[in-house]
Image 1 (cartoon, rainbow over the protein chains, first blue to last red):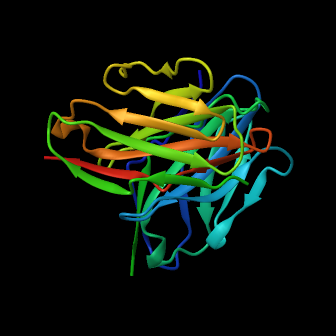
Image 2 (cartoon, chains in turn cyan, purple):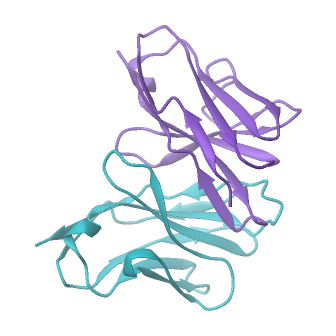
Length: 116
Length: 114
């Protein structure tokens, strides 16, 4: 069975500083990994994904994530945080089954607070 | 890509009543997934809906409480039955497409039970 761990409930960072939101996963076979962001009273927004290829994935709004197979991690990063990045971030995984018959499994979420 | 139309977007319901949520996808998909997001929590999978067969429910969710219909490859409904305030959540439908490399979500139904 797939699972995702986001070890931090809350991450606080000063504006302009780099940020990291951690994610580790467990899946049988090759993982498909995703990051989503949710702003208050808004729907899920897709940030980026890792399917195959380069371990460093670049996504929306200047975010990037690095896939590390040996550490089964997919940490979300941004070089310089903005106050507007403050939101709830979810890491998700599914197995690399191309049939589309398996859903995404989500981590519990990490609340990012960027302080001016 | 896939576009999912989910409705209603929000509702306030009396306890003991039922609400049916609809999801329409603009392309045919084998599976549709229903999630619940309780306030301040993550997304939890309720069930997987496969056209032509009974939905598969995750541990902690039962058909009597969350009956699901999947009459064709583009449409599904989730009913929240005999509601209580604990059912107040956001409910989302989702599909996986493009050989499993993309996931798409409806905008969610924000349910408040009073």
